[in-house]
Image 1 (tube, one colour):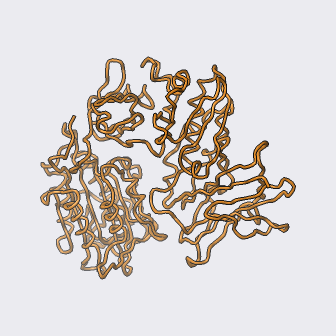
Image 2 (image 1 turned 135 degrees about the vertical axis):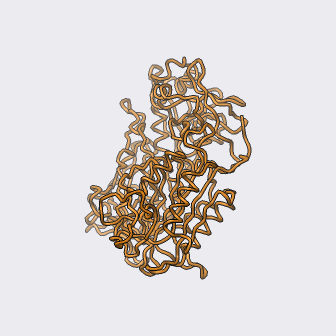
Image 3 (image 1 turned 90 degrees about the vertical axis):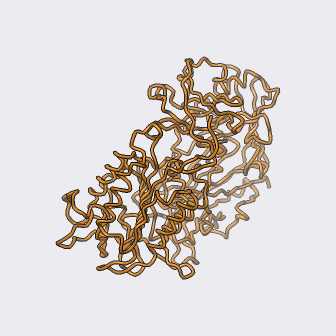
Length: 633
């Protein structure tokens, strides 16, 4: 096994920043952005200066840009060729300058999106598709920048001949309208990080007298603040600031790759070869001494650095691990000796529920929960999708505890999170010995419940969106908010027939699609209480007009449907439920979050086909939780 710092940096870059134009209005922050990105490459990634071609202002002629693109990138023998046994190098193109989509002057062409696409295809064919294009492009409207993604699309739909010297980023005509962007949105040749959407403007601003592009400044700041080898392009862009009029984008087939494919010096473990044993299991020479635990997840890439499989650790020794695939049959059919694995999630803390099993727990229960421990490898492909829970022998590390009270009676107790904080009692359920095979399905349902109950945005919370709970008067007018620190304490009176509503309040500058779910920690059910009717409607939770006055969306009163009533379950004196709010600037199809009780005999773990990416889809999103505690009066 090889660990430690890589001895050589395999990153090459072309950086272009243009403030000064002969025809169009000058800009102010593009060269500053270019210098900042160069400093990031040399200072953080330790990219040698000879690996960087840096072009600004007067030097950034059409000829020089295209010549640099060809000589420094496509024809550069120092950059490994596509298919090289040593792997592919990282190539980064950074551009900040004017953008255009107007008709070109008679004696020149604005670069067409086909042209730039073809250049990138040539580069990918020569050097592989580990390409990143960062584009913070501008127009002349004050300090505005208008993004053209990569191409500067002209009015003609006829591809511009490749042999013209305007192939790349030539004229940057300053009177830009909407760019068409790549005509191949599912890009395979490269990953694109763009300043904003096609119909938006990207802006410069002054910080302490220094002009910078907002996108470039936020992007470089995010790159400098994270562990690069543990983040993908998608997770990076989740950290880049978003503005109402400027919504940065990430595009490309391989945007789930780790940043720059880890071809920079790193202190983390290198990608390790995956071997296929005679018994048909996958194995790597990496084990508990490096921190691998049961359930650690691995991302597997082929020789072209394409992601081909996701594996998880099933058996872990001191210096080796046996890995299993979610789709074993497919993984076996595509296996190659060139496969290399990198850790994508060390402990699965967010998605994998840790189940504390007491040392005296019935072995038949353990075998039912983890059937693969004693299962012949040839039978593993008949098992359901990989489970979402792992065992732990330390109660302090557990998310839940499973207890066997009798042959037909079990109890599940929450050990952490808001369930433990509010001292919510555990749940008992019945299961006959011949039904023990349902235990993995039950635990999957509980893991699904816990994951979404605790789901939150990894970045800064949107504190300007809040949820109120309101008692409704006789005329259905709402009372003041009865939440205190996101908890509503209520007295239950079966004779009062009290009715309640909720109000979502928005003081932010964003329009949101909101979603309200109710989580019952006794039955582990999830119900949708509010969702937008369709993706074609306007966002129901409108932005604040001034950042001070909140817009209000009623739920359960006014135009917001039927009121809510709450009852105590029979035989109880106290009950707790949780409200989960998701907000997104884009419509989310997340009704699938709902589930019936996992303890129900016909429960089939509807959450098994998780759509994890759905909650990351929104350009701006957040999630928060509130609790309702009802006591017998």
